Amino acid sequence: MLKRWQQLNQYFRTRFILQPNFIRLVGLLVLLWALLRWNKQYEGSAVNHLFHQLITLSFYTLLIVPTVTLLLTVVSWLWNWNRLQHQQVHDAFRLYAPDRNTTVLKMPKLVNPLLGRLQVMLQTNKQLWVSKRNEQHRKPSPATRAIFDQQDLFSGNYETREIIIRHVDMLGLFALPVVITWVSEWIVPPMGGLPQSDLPEPKVTEQLLQKIKHWKKIEGEWLHYKKFDWGDDVRRVVWPVFARSRELVVRQPELQEPYASHVYIYASFYQQYLDKLAPEFANMMIDHYRRSIWSMLEAMEASDLLFRLVPDQSAGIAHVTGHQVRESIARLEWQQQHNLQDYVKPRKASVLVIHSGTDAHALQQMVTNARVLPQLVFIPLSEILRRPLRLRDWLTWIWLPPPDHRDAIRKKWWLSPVRQQLQQNEKRLQQIIAEAQRSGKMQ
Image 1 (spheres, rainbow, N blue to C red):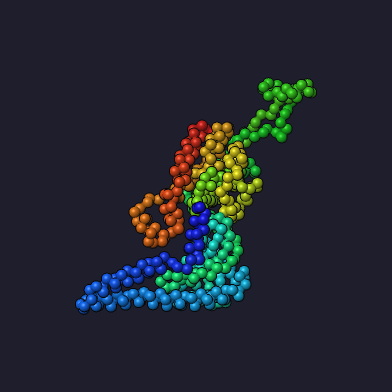
Image 2: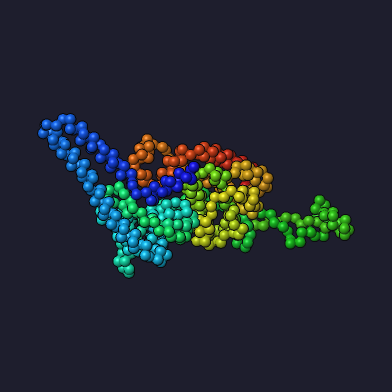
């Protein structure tokens, strides 16, 4: 039912010709018509005659002006539709990013509706992207460029499915669409800059680069046994070997390694509420989660720490270089296949990043069973959706469009049945992390 409603809402936003202002215009015309009928009961005085003339002028003005703007918009729509039908779509359209905050869609030269405007939309696999403005260019070749703001998009791997060019009249009463099927893929990397706490300490020795505070236990030699010498602990004697060869051997003791080079970061994208979350909530949460992970890695790069990102959705480990890791984070999605116990190695991990949708029972088991725990970094996702609900919000839902689509999502979060469950799970996770800190297992 929810998916059907979202598809219907998407249709009205992109393909439906009549706009909300048209309903307001019809209501105003009905009001003026009612006033004309009411004024006929008091004919005869000069005031009533003047009032009748003003109402009549307003009534016919509200009929003629929208009709003229609609005809001008139809002419522009027919011209652009006929031109786009004869274009090689993949050659005529090009999407590129001239800077970090802007994306441009280059299109064939289009005609703007007289007294109106063009509105370009990109229908992606995650959300609808609406252009901020359009620019006409004559050099080096005539073209129309739709300017998009990347701040309107969540981070992730996007696939464009359709380009929708809407011809909107001056009054915003009608929007005539031209729909073009166009497939393209691009990545929106997560933005950094979120504040970070103390950075973790390297735990894995790939190279002897950095001396660490807490020495870690390693095997003594690559041979695990040695001959029994005077002074060796009798408890380390391997009796099965003595039974076979009549030779006393002991296990090699563990040594303390004071050097390590890499911080291994395990980032869990397991989301136990994935089936209950609306796509808009899931997209906003994962965008904040990706930003938090990248901000941590960005701070490590600035401190010259070497790191390895170990995601739960690939067998390999991401590259060290920042740009590649940033794109790898953008490709990670919520999943329900791999829980914490399926891939986390507490002895190897320096950091384990979890979030509000992490399975509290699985985390409790790991804390209880592990001898050594990594640093647990908890990212509360409800904070990105939390906002006070004000009285004027009810009015904006009815009369005015929201100024920011993220703010509109935050308003809907108040009505979500998952909100209470997520907040209760956050409290439980914070209690488990506090228990792990008191246990002394976290290094």
